Length: 163
Image (cartoon, rainbow, N blue to C red; front, top):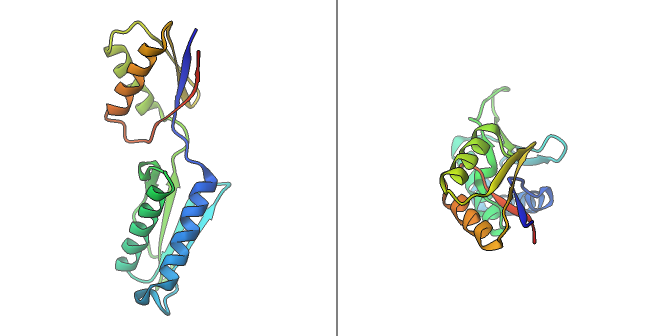
């Protein structure tokens, strides 16, 4: 029976590439010359740490990161941004978490969206993904389209389409 999985995971290597390009870009910009700006990626904790002196530079680095992520094919909705804080006087520090897997709220929304289609598909929530099965692949493609158009605040990937 044909099936596919709906998940929400960002590739760590693509994120690392986007961060490296962002770092190169802001070190070469004239308005960042002489600044103590940094951007680091922790692959184990799956978070990004940005440190800089001013709020304007923080926004500029975040904008550069978002544009580089889009060019890498990553959706910035997968980032969980916090407000910058100033623990040690001169530097602003912002920690950006990376959402991995579907959280319970978005999974529930997607399941309701799938059930509202009335297509007689079977949708199961499994750990951090949703498995959808049906007899025909065309019906599964309709479900994919409906999920893409749903108001989900996480990037969705459709993987393991099996016939």
